[in-house]
Length: 213
Image (tube, rainbow, N blue to C red; front, side, top):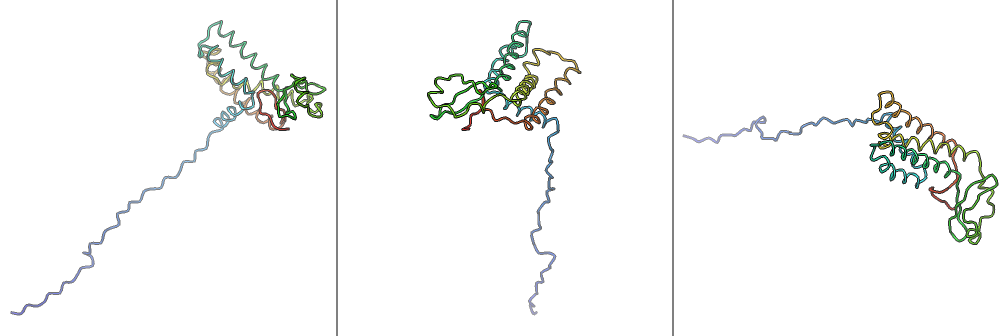
């Protein structure tokens, strides 16, 4: 009895080759949802607050929650809020007619623009520090009036977007009133932003940054 050597033939189909277990994850297309026109308008209105004097905006943010009792007004607090808004709006208007300059010793002095030039508030100290050569270049012009009116409108838009002010004067607005409160500040913001670009100013008055010129 002969023992023959049995040839082992490997079946190519029976090879233990690891199957590719890669799962195809469907690629998620990023949803490039661009902000709506209304959202962009609200952002524009928010950025317009940077065009207001810093002190006026800070006073508005500090006083309105106190004066309006966080939006719950009675007759007295409503009158106080009205007075505060009028005073702050007037300060925005007058701040557009102020300007500043750096004296030769580096000190910053402020003044009020008139038809003849700049009326310096602390003239003796400014004279001792060294006045610039010609103050007539700071005189009042038509652009200042435009910016003063636009600043008041911007302040109105910011006030109408404040929940404490709206809650004080319109605690339960009707549908039409609510639509006006939503549309008017945005419209004012868009129009003012366009006019601020058309009519730029070089003044650096009270509450605005000062440059070397």
